[in-house]
Amino acid sequence: MSKELVKKEISVSKKESTSLQVYDLKPLLYRPDLKVSDVLSTNGISDEQKSIILASLNETKIKFIDLVEDKNSWNTLKDILVKTIWESGIGMEKADQKLFITVAIDDIKNEFEMLTVSDVRIALKNGVRKKYGEFYGMNITTLNVWLKTYQEQTKIEAMLKLPLVKPIEEEKIYTEEEKLENHRIWIEGVYSEFENYKNTGIYNFYDFNGAFFSYAEKIGLIRLTHDEKLAIREKALLEFKSSKSLKNAKSAGERADFKHILENLQKENEKPYEEQIKLLCKKIVINNLFNDFAKKEKSLREMVEKLEKRKSETNQ
Image (cartoon, rainbow, N blue to C red; front, side):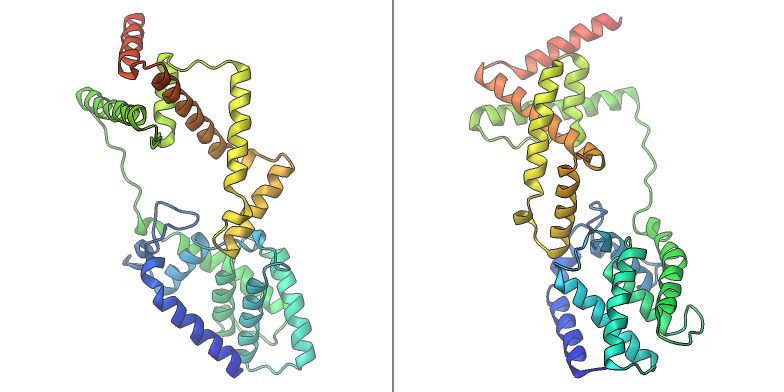
């Protein structure tokens, strides 16, 4: 292996070790309910399987990386292939190696787009060590066998270990008294947030999963016309697009994700982001509701309790 490549790996290793603590505490890209440290500290999972889980859930898929624009990702894939060729012990002329790497990266992008760069690294490391059987040359066929075996076997086996990181919690069954008490505590929190907004003008209310919106709609506090719904959705869509602006991206991977989202929205393909847009709509509605009540100095508590009573009497 070239000295330059060795130096690059050492440099990356040092950089990773210095930022390890911050990295460990960050939510995973595709599983924000988990942190890197949750995966690393789990027993019953091998180090390789932990690496595969993190590669799968905490890195941008190759599909969403523009390998022409993102030179770092392209160069990383090139370095992985150079190292694999060196470890295989199979000689390759410089011109042949250059052509092979270009074709290989293009093939990876087209045939294994849902893998990540780290997935490729792990797959090739296993392949060159003959974990996927004997091989008789460094060529596209060999790479395809390694990546396909990794994708269909190694990766699946690792992801089956994910429940060990965070077991599925059994749903707690509450008594009617507990439900009423939980509701009381929750709605008191909503009233408190409204009073804080009314007194300060600062909107900090976080309506988790649109719970208050749903409840307000259920008791009749929120009643929107068709035109109002369309106007709110249009505003939510603008907010969503703004949040995915490329200038807000904090990494090359996130930039690639944002670019893909914006391209979809440009084609009016909103379906993959429907839930996020709906939550923004609910947020806008509740913000407007708080603002309207504060301006008119109306009591949110009194109105909710009045509507609750009316609904209760109607159901009797």
